Image (cartoon, rainbow, N blue to C red; front, side, top):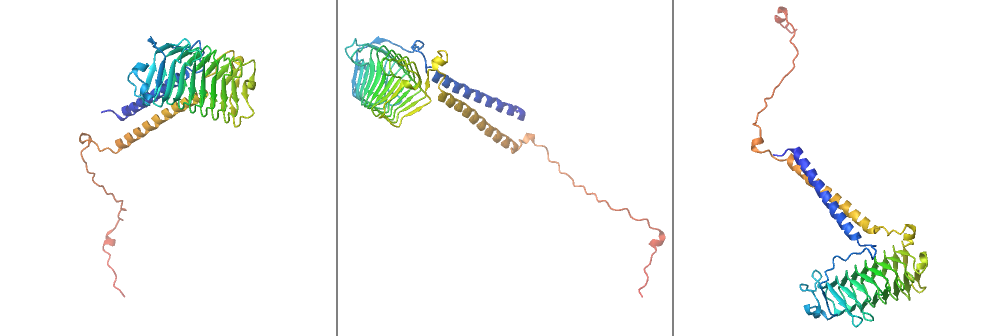
Length: 367
């Protein structure tokens, strides 16, 4: 059987392994989450694309049109955990039609890893009355993404270039996240509320980088906008309670500092906080550092994981010691019973020395 010392050492090794595992997993998530943010267009890789075939323009009108004949990959059922997939297509319309048109749907679906181009006056991806859609990791050129009357959709990790853009009309609660737009028009919201525009990279826009018209309660956060031909951000025509926070903005329309943000006087309740201007000029052309809030989030996760493992392991070890202390010994370990005989010792004074006269003493008669 293992000694108490050996078991204690085993518990310490177990604690160390669990702690290191939690740290490595947390760091892996942190690196993965930060690897694509604030990356240059020229540095962005699309090795994940598996472009297998050219496809004609896709038109889906209603939930029942998500079929193999309409370019949908088999296997999806339109649920949150198993969305319909439109993926790995090259669609070039040569200016005649929308590349992908989705109309009147509310099931979950995802458009991913596609190359879409040359829609001209038409639209690359058009949503009309659509919810629960995702446009992810596509290459889009000479075309645009346009949502009308569409809600709860996300547009993320796409590369959009050459006179393209993203536009919303009367579309609410959508997310535009971590896209790269180079030599494009703009990200435009019209009459669209409660949307989030986060961590996008916008370079050389031909108009305002991000513009809002009559759109309220939107968040514009941690975007990098530079070398544009107009304002970096424009908030116009009663676009109230807009949050403009933690953005990197520089060299737009020859302006500097806060002059790169246009806010009309009829826009109230807006928040300007934490925006950094001319970052690259002041830092030798370097990109901004990783996102601070994600760093602190993962640091908290790491510390919390280590603390939780240490606390749990400590409780288990204390329980083991307590159980070991009160455990009845096995029969082979018991020693035979040996009763202890009591010993009594009384220290009495020595008797006095007596002579014969003392022994012959006779009491006198009473008087």
